[in-house]
Length: 344
Ligand code: KG4
Ligand code: ZN
Image (tube, rainbow, N blue to C red; front, side, top):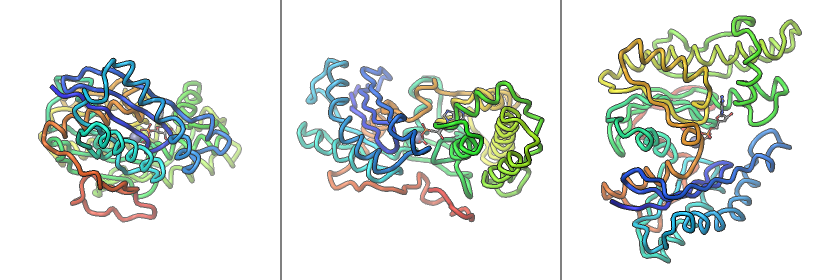
């Protein structure tokens, strides 16, 4: 049994957790920065990095106190080393290096996407490799075949916007505020998902990837036409995203073959329509559907500590010269998807 301290700071959440390799979460602290970024309608990287500097030391102290453990009782220090907003990544990674130096414990440099990819195993002890993961967050939209710790095959990615980014941009277009995902979901509750004809980009395509830029432009045209109410546009947009997820995920299930479960993670997995549709797809394929609890779906440090625990137990630790990386593909062998603003 090992005990890992994990740090997450790659976007606008500052988080620290202590997690044991037997899945016990001894402490979990998270400080969001929504209020600081709200006036700008999105995350401002420099504001986020400065906030991490101010918040992180207090969170580390609080997490250790909550877990009632001393630093030298921890077996390894894990931190997100990328991909993400580089200023924030540097703050968290350097804090972890300081703790590793002070305690003499090894550092585990965790890929943030690996944290999301392995998080379902923290909440579900029955989940076994290999599984198909739909990872949908503010920065990513990927289908990953998770074969083992450190073994990920990227089957699809987005050729333009990430899924959460599409929600956030749609919220902005509709004047629904920030962060956009929950605002669109709430607005959609009172709308008709069939009211506005919107495209399903890439649906039915032989190519495995996602695309959301065209959907966003269609939302803009629907708004400017003046023919539709905000709730109807929000509901129709959400339905279009769900339809794209299902089409692409069904294709990947067939392409990969042998998945033991369908898993969803990332902030957009908090969306109830998304969860419901994926659950029905899994049931139709005779597969278990696994979605971590909401707090584990959005950015947090427990998933980083957990990925750190699995890596530590596999002997995968890092030197104190581990780099902070703005881009860090989980599957370096994956072909680059063609498109305008391709994400890692
Ligand atoms: O995983 P996450 O917390 O951070 C990243 O690594 O990006 O994901 C945040 C994203 C944001 O784009 C947010 O709008 C979206 O997840 N999101 C949602 C919902 N809750 C959060 N999107 C749709 N419906 C939701 N309920
Ligand atoms: Zn994330």
